[in-house]
Image 1: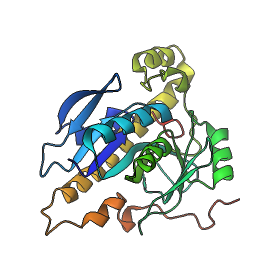
Image 2 (image 1 turned 30 degrees about the vertical axis):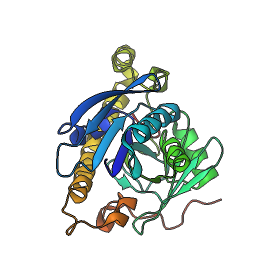
Image 3 (image 1 turned 90 degrees about the horizontal axis):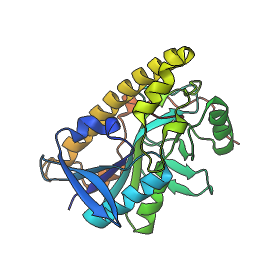
Image 4 (image 1 turned 180 degrees about the vertical axis):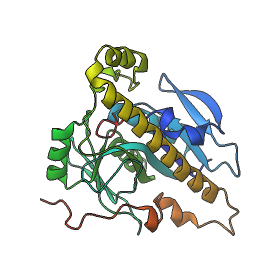
Length: 270
């Protein structure tokens, strides 16, 4: 059984990790899921891309727990910045995840972790990002992590999350929310047609595509490094406790703001 199960929203977010893995289709509770099983080392990792949003993430998390029995559940993917110190391509390893639906919290151990990630139920525009930052003291927003945390908690499994910033705090998503279907899939072709007929959106759509490519590249490099650590021989590995943190080295982390906020994915995330 793998030590780590990674739950992502869309395959494009983790494509660098999945391209060298075996694609396996399995069913759980009447739904089909695609899992990516590692072909390297000691088979320490499995990835499932469950779709955008809390319900899609919950279903994927429950499926991977039931079918693979991992020791650690990771929510990995894109997030939107809620403060100006986070930029596209920054890896964000929060110490706390808050569910905006009910305020429930998941705390994550690790000396390299800092700040709060809030999970929101919809694509967050600029005004909503500002509201979330004020309400929760959060530095970033996503649409899945709290659901994965809840599944891990329900099954007594350790939870962690690492996100990469794909849109900055002042980036307004170009109408992408309506193209997420009830299963959490993003209807790319429909969105492309929608954008093509609205020239005033072209610049933002181009920026969104560029941001997503950069975020996916950085996240892929980070995950590949993590997989290499997992697949080291036991006498060379960092140890089981290292599985608690999939965090960037200190030099790679953005500086925390001097005064912390108190009181799509991502901001739009796809």
